[in-house]
Each structure stands twice: as structure tokens, then as C-alpha cells.
Length: 166
Length: 289
Ligand SMILES: Cc1cc2nc3c(=O)[nH]c(=O)nc-3n(C[C@H](O)[C@H](O)[C@H](O)COP(=O)(O)OP(=O)(O)OC[C@H]3O[C@@H](n4cnc5c(N)ncnc54)[C@H](O)[C@@H]3O)c2cc1C
Ligand code: FES
Ligand code: FES
Image (cartoon, chains in turn cyan, purple):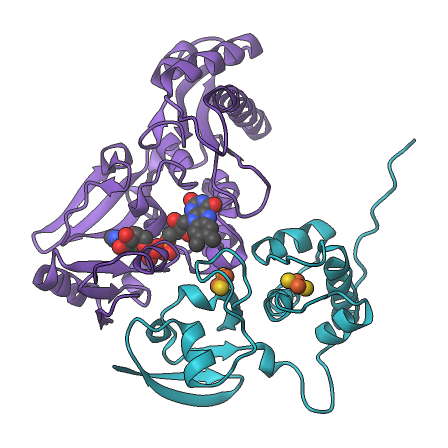
């Protein structure tokens, strides 16, 4: 067993886990943060996306021991009892999700994109979300939600796409 | 995953000692985006897993005497954001950008990509086209190798079980060499390459010089298309010659037929990829001059 200490959503948490435990498993089963989902377990679907020191990673492809001492942000770290995070609010307002399983991953990837503090285009959003699969929605509403959240949080406008000349 | 012992050495020297002590029953782990997928599927425990993801000695991108040094532990995301890469080898940014999705690029490293030695690796072609070398460290000391010699067979490099890939070096004379990378997949995001390709060349007195063409996913390892290169070498720059070279490149590859694409389709992609990367490298050369 290895003792692993993480800073999850600002709180220091320690658990003793077998070395082959992934960060996702430790979060869900040892620390009870079940917001991050287990989908494919091999890095394809992004349902397990969390931020490690600010970067979006698949928690199923990192050993808990590799995250020792790092700052982990999960979906549980975004909202408070009183208030949704603006990304969550935007997703709710446009009805971005259906079953919601992909939601925590989508929202964490979106958070990392917006936190980068760079100008974003629709193409950047599609590129950023290409590692988050959704089996329900067809992505259109999710991308709308990301655009609304980006504009709300940064106060910027997404560049207009000029209609093609007829 | 099958249980294993987990070591996190604090220095490269400690990692080398651990490798020597436990090899061959040992696995090096960096970003884990290839290794952990594999360890989730194997029936046997790997024995000892050595985590090198915190080793500062594997990090960093800097100019050294030999050229541009990129630590084996540099991630694809770090490559995409690095000013030295942007200035000297911008084609590497395009290649890094095509590796998986952002989650994979944030963890996955350049060294890890090369050591997997899968034919479809997206870092391979550009580095081969720029004549990259690698530095390898083992208990017996360091050794230098060309990337060409490093790739031995599918999933097999020239690394001994007790050796660590330390860094990748782009030789000084190739910094700023006009180059281009292209990848064809079944879709834009997060798809393995059906074919990928890179070209690099100088133009001197309107003649092609030191032409390099590298192709991935079309042979057991990433290869150079030497006959196509030879056709262009020393010749006056012409579009017709580029088209001819692209046709010749097809004959140098042995793509497979599988459920993702037929051999015929891959052959078409080799021609298109060779042509477009040569054209783009030429375009970059025109902008430079
Ligand atoms: C969803 C997904 C999508 C992907 N898409 C792509 C893609 O589009 N293109 C692509 O090329 N790859 C892709 N990959 C493969 C992988 O992400 C890359 O090859 C990555 O660069 C591997 O780096 P790593 O640091 O994660 O390696 P690891 O998984 O840590 O290691 C890979 C191998 O290299 C060895 N190793 C690692 N570092 C060293 C070292 N310094 N010295 C000696 N041995 C070492 C390990 O023992 C292991 O055998 C994808 C993977 C996933 C999960
Ligand atoms: S569960 Fe981690 S990427 Fe699918
Ligand atoms: S809403 Fe169901 S998977 Fe995305």
C-alpha cells in the first residue's frame, strides 16, 4: 500500500491505496468524490476528466501515486450549495446535456479551456472537447453552452462566423 | 491492473540504479497514456513500475551545442506552447497537436511516444525528417543514437531493459529547416493516423537540398522515403518533380489492409501526404527567403 495525499478542491485528503490504483479510483472509492465518472477506463471518453494543477487530464490514466501532493479540481469543487458555477448555469440554461453522464468531464474540460485566458473560436472549442464523448446530444447544445459560459466568464465575444457568399 | 511495486526515484541516477536492480521485470512510467492502458490489459504483473514523471532531468527544451535539446519527459502540450520549438521547429507543434485530445497531450510525453515505437506515432515523421538523435542512459553510461536506429520493429526500440531515454536532439544545422507535417485519420480529433507524413528541405540557388521525407503508419516502423528524396536532391525546384516524388514514395511503403482503411486508400494518402508536405515545406522556405 502507498499513502497518497492530494489537495482535492482545496482540501487535503489522504488515503492508503494499492500502487496500481488510478487517480479516478482513489477519488471515487477512497475519497467518495463520485462526480467524475468511469466510462471507458482507457483514455478515450473523457468522462473521468479532472484538473490536475490546472490541466485537464483523464483520471483513469494516472496513478494515484503520480498525483501525490498535487491540486485536483473535480466537478464537486465548482458549485456551492447556493450557486452553480457559470459553466454549469450555462449548460443548464441551454439544456446542453441529456442523461448527463458526460457532463462532469465536459464541464471540467471547458473550465480548463476558459481558464487558459486566451481568445477562443468555435473551432478551438471543438478541438478542446474532442476527447469528451457524448452518446446522447450530438454536441450542438454542449458547444452552445460552452460559448455562453466563455462569454459570461470572460466578458469577450466569440468571433462572428461570416455567412458564405451565395 | 495486476499488483506491482511502485518506485518514484527523486533523481535520474536513482532511476538508473533502480532500473539496473530490477530489470528485466520493470516498467518505466511517464505520462502513462500508453503504459497504463497496456497494464490494464496484461495478465502478468510488470513487477516493478518506476515513475519518471517527476524527474526534472527529463524536462526542459533548450539550445545546446549539438542543437535543440528536448527532454524525453516534455509533454505534447509543453511542445505546443514552447517559444524555442515555435522558432526553430514549428512543424513539431503541428505534430504534437494531432496527438489524441487535450487530456492525452497534457500527460503524454515526447519520449513516451517514441518508445512505444508504434508505426502510427505522430512524433516520429517530423523528427525523422529533421535527422533527430536520441540520448540514452544506462548503468554503463550514456550513448547517442540516430532516431532511425532507435526504431527497431513494431513496439521495439533499441533500448535495453535497464536503459532510459533521456532526450531528443534536433541537430544544429537543421534548426529553422523548412518542414511540414500532416496526419490523416478517420476523423479530426483523437484518432490514430491512417497515414502521417513529414518533409523537410532547404532550397539553395533554386535547387532542392538535403530533402527528407518520412512516412508513418505505412511500414513496421516510421520510415524515410529515400528514393523520393533522391529524385529531388540537387534538382531545380519544380511542382512537376514534387508530384513525381510523391508517386515514388508510394512504392517505398508497405501499408496494411485493415478495417480502418484499405491498402489502396492508404497508398493514395501516402501520395497526397508526401506531395502536400513537400509543397508546404517549399512554401515555408519561400516565406523565409
Ligand atoms: C486516448 C488516447 C489517444 C492517443 N492518441 C494518440 C495519437 O493520436 N497519436 C500518437 O502518436 N499517440 C497517441 N496516443 C498514445 C500516447 O498517448 C502517446 O504515445 C504518448 O506520447 C505516450 O507518452 P507517455 O508519456 O504517456 O508514455 P507512457 O505511457 O508513460 O510510456 C509509454 C512507453 O514508453 C516507455 N517509456 C516512457 N518514457 C520513457 C523513457 N524516458 N525512457 C524509456 N522508456 C520510456 C514506457 O515504459 C512505455 O513502454 C494516444 C493514447 C490515448 C490513451
Ligand atoms: S474513463 Fe477515463 S477516459 Fe474514459
Ligand atoms: S448527455 Fe448523455 S452522454 Fe452526454
